[in-house]
Length: 178
Length: 125
Length: 171
Image 1 (cartoon, one colour):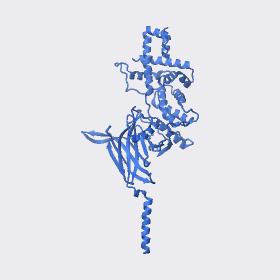
Image 2 (tube, rainbow over the protein chains, first blue to last red; image 1 turned 180 degrees about the vertical axis):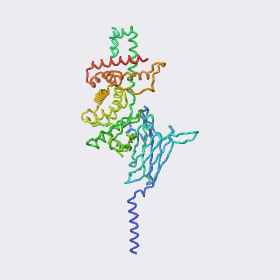
Image 3 (cartoon, each protein chain N blue to C red; image 1 turned 120 degrees about the horizontal axis):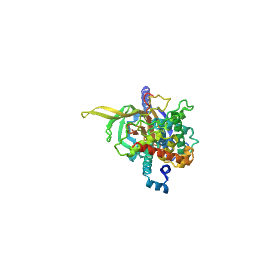
Image 4 (tube, one colour; image 1 turned 60 degrees about the vertical axis):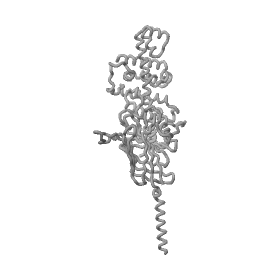
């Protein structure tokens, strides 16, 4: 009996050790809520949801853009270690976007840290012929790796993504789903 | 009063009785007065013209590299604005890989908001 | 790669070293003044870089509101640049050819006024830029330029008249 008990104990210890070393195992998904904003010199009032009011307040205090506007929002869910992406069309401008990342990992305890490798967004303008889209002209893109705290709003942006000199801004809010 | 005396006074914005009296009788000075007024409006509108983004160059061989980097990053933050000018021609940093975009992380007074700003290095510099 | 991590001061901060805030507040003004004094955007950006580098080096000696100091240094930096260059350049405005058929609209007048600025003597240009574009008082302009108020009034008057003549002659 002793060898069986020893093996069972060893197996249990092994499983327990693996779970402790890999918190991802307990985590089903990482959900990113992403808001696509533009910062512009147009003297207008901000057009963003109430959730982003405090974020936009900080943007006003740092940058000299006169107003911020929400272009679109998306939710992307993926499993730790996996690649995920999505695409869409911005309602007002008709620009196409591709958003995604190569890999997402989670560490720590609640609130978790979410590590995103090669987060990428690209905005493009479709080129059509005879009513069919034959190509896309990339206007702007952002590629970066990030460490985000769960529940925190992380802003990623760059200036002058179009002829008007507007800023392309993402506000990313990660959530870990267990 | 003659035009030689009146026009410098008009230029200074002085409208004494003597100036007004001369203006009433002098079409040439009236024309100058109209141009001065219109030009004043034109000059004032130049005040609200937006300037393009300004990207600072980190000076080479600073003794305190991290101070220079922080200063340049701070200047960059302060200068980011929409632009309508030709592409930026100056790299932000002379000691980083010139093809790699720079990323500046800003911790705001709101603990729930963190900003990362991406600056692309110009091609070929 | 992250260049730097910065802790931004609170919006209502009175920190004496609010350098980043000063830059955010005044970079438009510095560039604008430099642009009107030098006539070329690239030169204005060079000048603005120099101005803010000087501000950074002197940040502990400059008052919390550095606006007057920035005006003065901007004028001085531009003056140095002009002395090296000798002439005021004008941006290529070939896409804004004058239209003599049209009545002189404000945009056309603005274009001619900007052109005329480049033809002014340096001291008159500085005085009229600070007084009529930046909207500073005669006393403030005198302090920035380091001259008497009567000198400012004289320069401004002369500049305005030259501009009026320049615009009128191109009607």
